[in-house]
Image 1 (tube, rainbow, N blue to C red):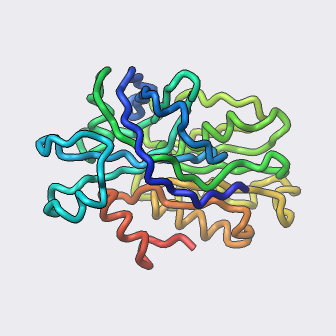
Image 2: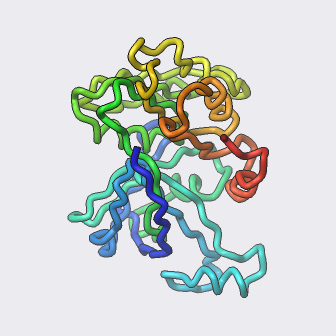
Image 3: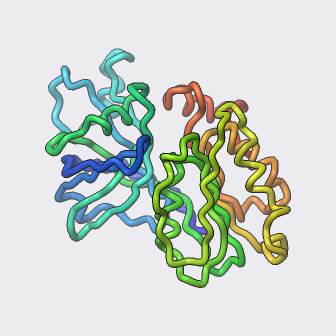
Length: 274
């Protein structure tokens, strides 16, 4: 597993080139900017950036001095950040794509993406990240909901044909099923959960009892499990016998929480996934 602890404060001022609806709840925004030619490569397939939103009434120009703004502005006018996985970046073409999960008008980043048009501006940070698939592991397991799909799809694209494993994607609407290309010997299973309050739905599908025999041996599997917090906690309990260094596991979001509340809770016992 590849791990990166680098978190740069570098900013990229980008413009929207195009948008594409991949499904009823997933929109891809393609961004351009000259600084993408030097966008860092941290070697992670779950590479993520912070999107920076600043109150337009302030009349500020990017890049922003975030530390100064947080010190001088009242709480309700300070910059707001949201975390998103980079779906794809082409440094030579100066293009970067981010896939946004949308659910109506709730939230900040998703409504922005749903309404984005060519020429709109978005400011992002340099990437962080912490995972890359190990193609030499006998069995690779990827589990998550639509929020984890960009990272999972990026990992699948990086795998050779000989890699084996399974992808388990939880969705609430069959219309959200989209092609997930890979050259690897990976089965992609779309799992429709009719009850969004059932936090154990995905965990039951991840159960190691269903893995091949060699995957259940010590070091035989590598797991990437990211998505809604309570769902991921249930998966962690199912994977209690899998070594911690063989698992990349994290809650990307929490049902009924804004990202600001969610991130604050991650520092408390309620939000930890150990």
